[in-house]
Length: 410
Image (spheres, rainbow, N blue to C red):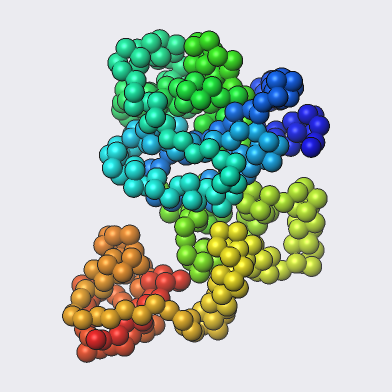
């Protein structure tokens, strides 16, 4: 087992707070907690929350999961918290307008596979999975007033996103202020020693969580705020489901491989750092190899895609995905294996692609047609009202660069 100081260095690696003093404070507090926990013979209580606003986690979420994994490896008590109650509002931290509110039924359905996805990184036997509706749904109005009395409205309104909306005349709804309060109570309910989160959670963890714990007689948690965010497939903007630049953990192997291959070369270093957890020495060697030409970006990206697909699926899936990629994108041909679907009656292309799950909605299908993104036997579909008849089959329907279905008649 590493020494306390060695644990501190590892657990604080990658953390950033916007100022050096806060980082030093958190580092000192973490060291004190570790020393006390060792003396008491107990593990630290550590958690990170994930709101099931959608049904899939993505590679960006694994940054905090890997930090939780480090705590697990040092023998600490790790909780993967599913934000089943906070999701009803949605975190306003990085939003310029209020989120749509979800129903409890939508949240439950989205959360159904969250733990299974998390176990791609975390050890199932060492992970406590909880839902925050356990405690948040039991609070009454008197409880809310008591909790809210620990904060001022100004503390919330000076946050950057709220300040921007206030200045531009955009509405800030009262329920949005409750989110930080709710997340702060998560720390209280779990008597947390440490909470892990991303930069967008700085206020919720460092201010709301710690202040509420202190106000209710608990020792404020140590905040481990990860300093870097994973860029999406555009290589620029933080990976986000709402922006469509994400790589879901539930993506099929071929789709996952293809999405990684679409990442710009400039993002290779940070992907190896944040997704694969490469050491500074490995990253320097990679950077030097790319700069000198000793390593070709496509070969590096291919290895990255194989590693990611292997992690979230299997080595066999990664090998098959690379074969598929070679067939489709290097030879310009079609994959040797693809799903086959019987078409029994004439159907609009828009409706067919939606029914087969090749697009999320009819609107997406129409947009892809307008962008020349849907093909039949390699011919671009240009008419949003286009139909396919059984008598015209067999044909290969291609949506985007990576989705293929062979259509046959009954």
